[in-house]
Amino acid sequence: MQQAPTIILIILYLVGLVSTYLAAWAQLRSRVPAAKEFFFLLMAVAVYAFGYAVELSRINIHGVLQAIKLEYIGLAFIPSLLLVFVYHYIYKHSMKRKYALWFFIIPTITLLLVFSINSHSLFYINPQVVEGDFFPVLSFEKGNWYYVNFLYQQLVSITAIVLLALYARRNKGKQRKHAIAIIVAAIMPLLGSVFYIFGLIPGQLDPGPFTLSITSLIISVGIFRLGLFELVPAAREFALDSIRDGFLVVDKKCRLQDMNKAARALPGANKLIIGETLPKNNPFVRYLAAIIDGSEQELKFSVDGNDGNIHYYQATAYAIETNVPYEKGTTILISDITDSANLMKMLSHKSQTDELTGLLNRRQLIRLGDNEIKRSKQNNTPIGVILIDLDHFKSVNEDFGQSTGDHILKEVTKCFASGLRNVDIFGRYGGEEFVIFLPNTDMALANTIAERLKEKILTLKLNIDGKEIDTTASFGVHATVANSLTTIDTLINVADKALRLAKNKGRNQVALSSDIPKE
Image 1 (spheres, one colour):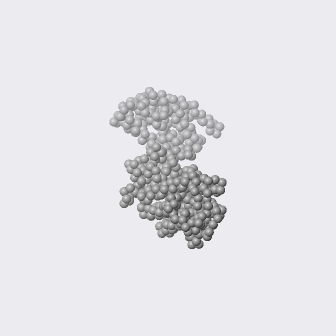
Image 2 (cartoon, one colour):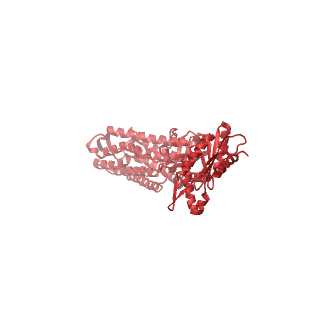
Image 3 (cartoon, rainbow, N blue to C red):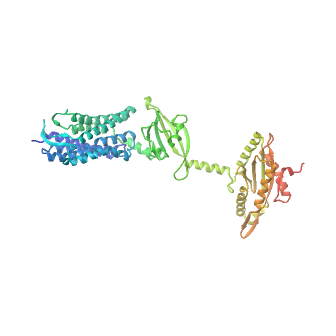
């Protein structure tokens, strides 16, 4: 028996070389989605083509079976690699390893059975080399696992083709052309294997490597004419994955079409699957609900981060308009505004508080006091106010210096704060003066609070440079039910008159507005 014609061997070697070259081309563009999977797919095709060329150059059964072992290193895995490649190409991210491994279990078993083919009949039964119509070929009866492997390969290949068809239907332009090219390339070996299993190929010739030659040609057109792995998409993906802002694309049916690494890093987003409908119970989706349903174009939300801090985000929606109705959707850009939000909170806090004591400053104190006056008018409830002045504080600054005075103010602030209710509004009015607004408080209760504060400050003992300083304060108390004539100024003026009365009595006193002599 003579070996196969040289021209056929040359064709097979060319298929292997072209596949190897295209695999290397894809590897150089490994940043493009699915290029790495495409590399392994084409290398499997190349191994299969080289192995079949070796098989056809052998005329004895031992040499043929050795060549078949080489073939199946590639052939067994081609459909599974095709599916993994298609998945990444469509969904823009690799299939999770724990799922991808399942698709390689049957191919691995097939490879093991082929390598041990002499010790069982699960794959080939009574294999022998016979004179074919054109050249010597392997003749055998098909074992049970041969059919299992065949059905599995067809099922996986058909799944990949269906996914590509659905993707082509959803897209247009180059994306659709790319998908169609891959579909045609995948269909050719699928049809060849079906014809072979049903004995429709003359001379028992395996059409696989020859259909793969057509596949390689189509892939070449896809790469060099259609830009299947061109640089621009790679650069675009690299740019999107490099920016700090999260980026999502959602179609009008609320299916996630794309997202970058920054978006996946957000809480709950790593569980989203490209191509599937956004789950309403996902925390990340709930944050964006108003944008996804179109009721808001921009929104802000906060999330508890893994670092224990609150992180703030701003999401903005941009409509995607196309000529094809089912392609309309929304691009959502999510920016981390934690730094600016914290800065604004800090500035807001500083604008409302006294820098030295941390209490409300005069402006914020007046604003909140005015709100309580309005509430008193509306609800016909009393409002109390206490005006406090530290006794002989100027002499403390003169005798001990400004820093000592500041220290005393801080300690006095803590002392007073410990004697107030949560609802009371406490602030620094200026210098050594403090104001406390007391919501829903009559004169009797306001007097009780003031007396408690007077006793508290008497217990405050401050030691400065070995010298103990006693600090006292005078208190002016007023309470009333606000009417149309009541303002912040009138309220504080009455409390100020009571404060002067307390000072005139010798300081370290509480004086009520009801004690003010009538003019």
